[in-house]
Image 1 (cartoon, rainbow, N blue to C red):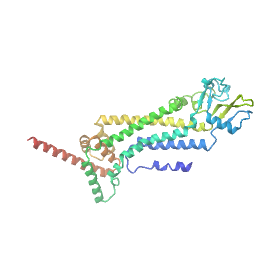
Image 2 (image 1 turned 180 degrees about the horizontal axis):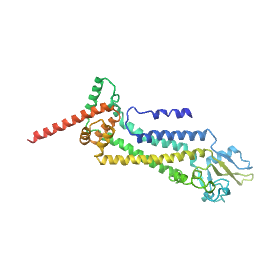
Image 3 (image 1 turned 60 degrees about the horizontal axis):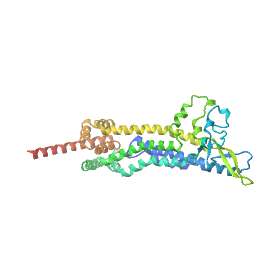
Image 4 (image 1 turned 30 degrees about the vertical axis):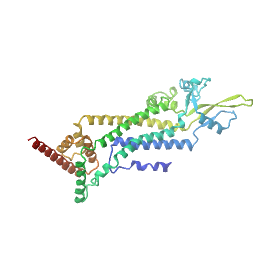
Length: 370
């Protein structure tokens, strides 16, 4: 398992060229690795260890047959067994079912947890994969070595010229680039809330309030409560084994089953619940911030100046008002990758080019009108 987890190390490597933001990386990189790690742990516990152990007393049913049968046919509990003092039952939910099929709560999802975690990880990674396809290394090409401040002046001037030439020739052509990234950010937010909805369905309506119920029981005495983790991921359950008797009649054997796997599952999902709540808040904040950023243009110069205080406010104001939203986003992201001193020079020269172009256009219009 260590070798498998070690192979995930490259996903945490620092990006040489930044094409997203920290919340995007937390969602698409850290959460993906986290869920894959949990999936590996649960898979190891399920398929390498013994996920279920059942016994029926002196029924004569072979233990291996009973374990296999109860694992495949699923186990159940009686919700009424969670009420009242714990000293009155063998284990929470393990009470006489009185042949009441409607009152039984069956547990089937623990067999699928390892697969669900893996597919959750893939859905978390999807926005990053989609953005990598759309971005296609554009930012890395634009940086072209300008992220290193200590370099030959000739090389620096050459690369600056290439960058400025690109920005001038491709002016007003980056709106699709910017909106694709913002779509991927919104996709991260939607993914978290849709996954929480899916897990709530997967756990029969017990996931949304899972963490709250677990935390709310911390002030109660152990004798007067049952941990909600036990209700969702029981470690002791019931199983009804049926077989033909000597005369052809159906014999029923009531079995008690221990599920060590659920000890891992309950801790895994209390962490996932807390993490998804935090991540949901962060991604929702990101979407709200991005919406405000798009709808309130006055925010853009302030945001750019805050991240690049070496650049003059005059140049920032000019570019923020004269460039399209997509072009503005490109030069903003360049500020996250280029050396600050070089970036200052690039922005100053680009602002001067924009100013000269606007001046030439005004003079042309005046000459035509006269």
